[in-house]
Image 1: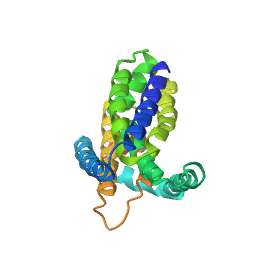
Image 2: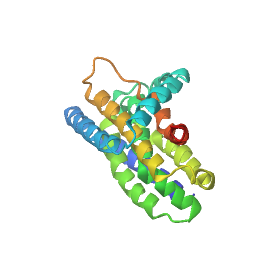
Image 3: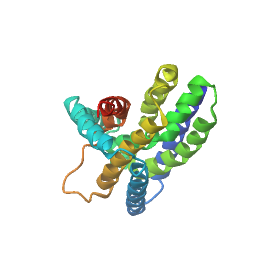
Image 4: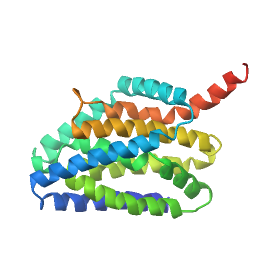
Length: 236
């Protein structure tokens, strides 16, 4: 867990630094940076989604994952949390940005990808923290930039990193047999598709706002889908 706490700290500190810088930069510059981040997010998402070797897995994972997320009202709950913080804690100060958008963006960016899975498994099973420490350095830079552009929701994503990455580390012994290279690839592909949607939201190029938080359960479905798929394929 030391590596997880380090990662949490880097996200939090980077986010706080970004909020400080946000107060120092002009609104027009912040908007330009957000546009750049939107483009970068789409590019990263495309690269990650191309990792899929089983398009059916990607389709089913996104469909069922989004269905569950919608039933759990994940997007609505995050929006409600953002509204609460905005009205009660942040006094509706626009300089803090939109909590829900920054939080959702940061959660996906920091927790979706092979470095999160592989690093957490290595930390939990072998006590090897190299990957997580490398990820922590990258997350520090990312959280600073994202918080400067998108606001207070970004440092709050440190809580999600603690729960998600900490859970993977603590349960690494149980999860390792199921998180094969194939599963991790599809995990990344589903995350990549979500990142593309996130980039679309950031750039506001869609006629409606995509409910990214509702889609996040999709990243877990390859763990169930692939063994089931291979089992059914054995009968053909």
